[in-house]
Length: 402
Image 1 (cartoon, one colour):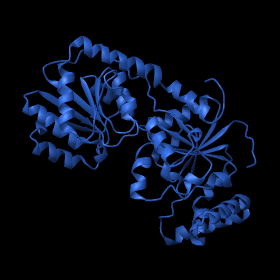
Image 2 (cartoon, rainbow, N blue to C red; image 1 turned 30 degrees about the vertical axis):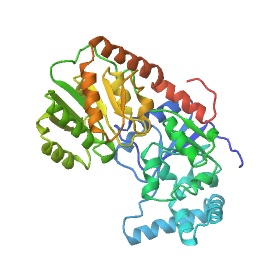
Image 3 (cartoon, one colour; image 1 turned 90 degrees about the vertical axis):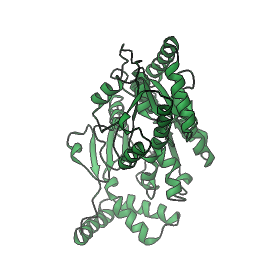
Image 4 (cartoon, rainbow, N blue to C red; image 1 turned 135 degrees about the vertical axis):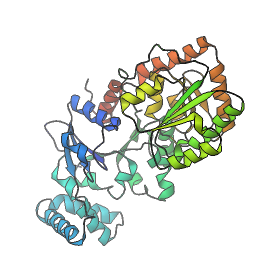
């Protein structure tokens, strides 16, 4: 591959759309790279309203689902560009796709859909999720750029179940992989990916914003909370079953669920059937400042997921001084160190979760404070934005201080 030079090291980030204000990971990452001297270009399939004031250049593909004649016109423009504006890159993409066994029809479609990448010159093309690289495995090589792919949990563990063989082509390419946990690294190694091609960079939070208050939340009514999208993989039904067991034991509690999603109706119905709906509050989506206020009224944070790459919300809860009880799903056991910074319970075992919550609630205040202090210190020292920014600078091969 011929190495080209740009005025600044240039990173092309690939996402479905511009990150919304609540999607702090990508916004913080882009800001950190810019502060480290990188030029960042964001490639997206479509644009929403938040793109107007985004911090870096945004390059969007055409929406081909806009009617036959408009799609035909967009296709004509893309083919014209491939022939007269970007012939070298277009031919390289065609040749690499053909070598991978892609049919002529799919190859032409690939050239049309990926033409918008070719207007830019970048040193790295980094796909923010694994599935975004599927059918685009050769775009970076066609641009004479290095290729990186991030896996965040769902795309590594669940996408291959929904789309068998989806990463077969990707895993044959020269790619540098970013994952959130050691467990995810091992999962990639099981696909025969070399260890030196994988870098673990955990999520990070704004530790200055998520600072523990001095309030003590250990009253007679146990206050619990979870911040998550209402999705089956978050294990809410198991959590509700565990809370129903606590009610049978006469333990007074209130559980606040912060977030929204397709499972809301199912969860409301489950809580009603379990006889605990009056002890549950569904807040819906909240702003970050409102989430912090809710968590400051909470004693125990519960994240009893079935599948979880790592989970920023658990880091935020620890940083705020909440006692955290989580499942052993993927990266959660690295997020929370069992009996040191919180507690890890086997997933899909509501009886075990209920017993653990009861045990934590019954701990002496000194023991609770010890766990809280350990958690706060570890998050502050390990999971801050500056640590993450430096890790990504190393990921892209530059030894530069931020």
